[in-house]
Picture 1 (tube, rainbow, N blue to C red):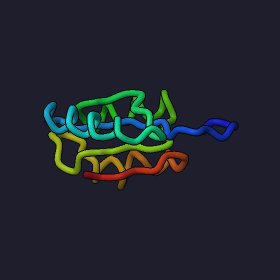
Picture 2 (cartoon, rainbow, N blue to C red):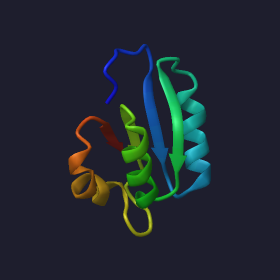
Picture 3 (cartoon, rainbow, N blue to C red):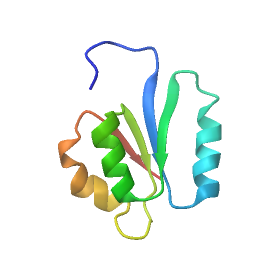
Picture 4 (cartoon, rainbow, N blue to C red):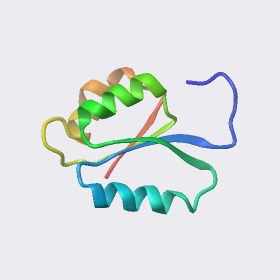
Amino acid sequence: MRDRATATLTTVVVDDEQLALDELSYLLKDFPEVEVIASGSNGLEAADLIEKLEPELVFLDVQMPGLDGLGWSGGCGKGSASSHISSL
């Protein structure tokens, strides 16, 4: 997590359905305090992006092939307490 306070929340969006990913990213543009810094299409990409970018907010799809949002937040994401996780 960053040491300084920011006016925006850095955000990662992860969904295996491209249309849903695009729609959520588009809708988030209406919130100037939210900056989508990356997107992914599965739980493994989510884990990599979150570890690398340390976003303040993460949107994860709850049903994806392989590692989904629920599996990630229940197991893999335990060490990422600095990010707020929202499962869709």
